Picture 1 (spheres, one colour):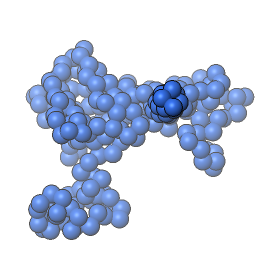
Picture 2 (cartoon, one colour):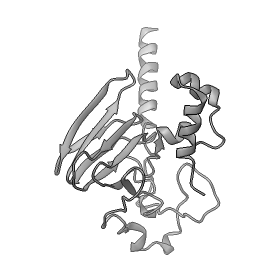
Picture 3 (cartoon, helix red, strand yellow):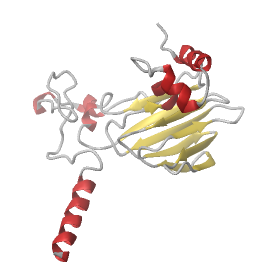
Length: 217
C-alpha cells in the first residue's frame, strides 16, 4: 500500500511538471499558420514547403518604443504572433521602454516565468508573493531580475533619463493581464458593489477609476 501510494505521488508529480510549460515540440519546426481557422492549444503548423527565413525573423525590437502615453512606458512583444517560427519552441522576448518616471504597471504572465535584462538606465522592479510579501530591487544596465510565473510584478524608471529592458519568457505566448485594467476596464465591467467592497471605497471612487481606464474609442 505504501509503495503504491509513493508511485501514485511520483506519477502525479511528473504529470504536473510535464504540463507546467508550453508543450514540447515533436518535429524540427512547426511554423505557426496564423491564418488557419483550426483552433488548437497553440497554432497548427504551416506546410513545410511554405516555410522561409522570414518566419524566424523580426526586427520590431531594434528601435525604442514611443513612451508618450499615460504610463510613460511601452512594451513591444516578439512572441509567436510576430515570429511564427516560435510555435512549439517555448520561448519569446519583449522590449520595454520607459520614459523618466515611466511605469510598466502591476501585471501577471499566467503562462510564463520572466527574466528581465536592463539595456539602458536603471529601473525599480518587484513582485508580490501569494503571502503578500513584496520582493523588490533597483537594477541597472547589464543586471537581471526574475519574476516567477503568475505573480503580480512591475517595473518603474525612477530616474531622469529614459530606460530600456529586454524580457525573456519560457513561453511562446506568455499572456499579460494588467491588474487595474482587468478589474476596472473589463467587458462587461466588474460590478461596482464588488469593487467597492473589495477596495473599501465608495461608488464614486470606483466610477472615477473606471472612467480613467476605459478603452479610448
